[in-house]
Length: 414
Ligand SMILES: Cc1cc2nc3c(=O)[nH]c(=O)nc-3n(C[C@H](O)[C@H](O)[C@H](O)COP(=O)(O)OP(=O)(O)OC[C@H]3O[C@@H](n4cnc5c(N)ncnc54)[C@H](O)[C@@H]3O)c2cc1C
Image (cartoon, rainbow, N blue to C red; front, side):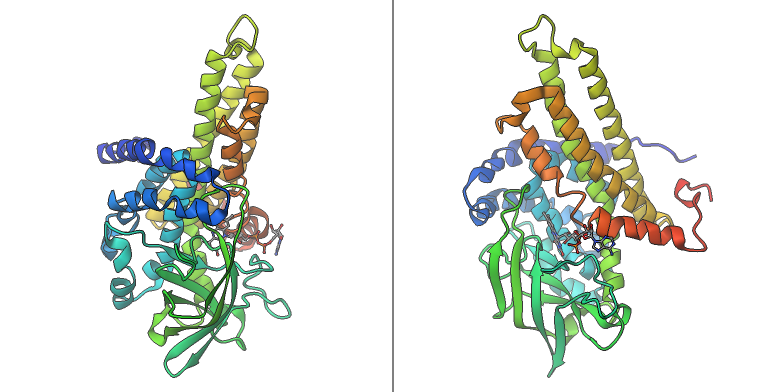
């Protein structure tokens, strides 16, 4: 019998360390979010990001086998809940960097790993990596055959160098602190445009290009106000031939594998935001009478709404942890559980935070209260990391259509 959600002493300690760091460093760093432009806001988080790196949190996201200290996705989830509940922008900068190196971790050779991962294993500086999948005009149909455009960015091999041209959008931290590029960009591109997408797309690692990376703009996003999501171009950016990750033409599979673990984590990000909103709403309900006789928690409508919110938070956390555990243990149900965690946790976050705003009432609509910010951050969760409509439900639909699909596999009872 192995159903036990008790954290190990090591994990409980890690959770407390993460919580302490979040309250001591990341809470104050939220001030960056009130600066006027997206780039000013992002640049103002650099100190907090450096502190995250110096405290070893980035190293703790990289598996021990690759030189880091991660013991699995579940530990990452425990840490992410603590950090993200306090500062979504800076935490996403770190998690976006982890996503940025995932194709190296999953598809890289030993030589590629030791060369490309080095900046991310140090406890110094502010290293950034970006996973460059999304493009202007949409990316949900990256695997579309012609006449669909699918992936439009193209890489051509010339004299031992990949020459990459195309445009990307929404890629976390991709243009770096100085518009010249993150330390490493893993670029999804067509290496054999004449072949079908499942054989003609690859992922190529680009180390801070000397030229050709063209910054277009920093998107003024609804939430994650101090996180950088740029639109930019590759104009004949070159990368050595040996920077192709995994096998040539197997890029779609590598990208999909990278996005399995992140799905389970997005469920946890939903939990983090709901938890922060719940803490505020519960305190408000306990302490505010709003001109009446009793704290509003005494009103049944308020109590029931809080009870429903708390129930959803617990359900989302355990589904997400189950998804992480399934990924860690390479369960055949890992894809299904991770995607379900993403869909459920992300959509629950939007719904629950909105419900909690109704509990608090009009003062929730003032940015002095955290709920508006938390909702703005939560709105990204159903539509990023593969939108729930255009990507994630389609993936589940694809699983259901497989003749060998076994509904009991996810329960471990197959
Ligand atoms: C804060 C933030 C950080 C991000 N970081 C990154 C990053 O690091 N790297 C990166 O590459 N991207 C990143 N993104 C972008 C984002 O993850 C993706 O672009 C997005 O998930 C693509 O999903 P989409 O479904 O909206 O795609 P789109 O192609 O834009 O589709 C739009 C809509 O069309 C409909 N649709 C399209 N095709 C279909 C279909 N076949 N079936 C059903 N419906 C369909 C759906 O309703 C879908 O929502 C980030 C975004 C944000 C907000």
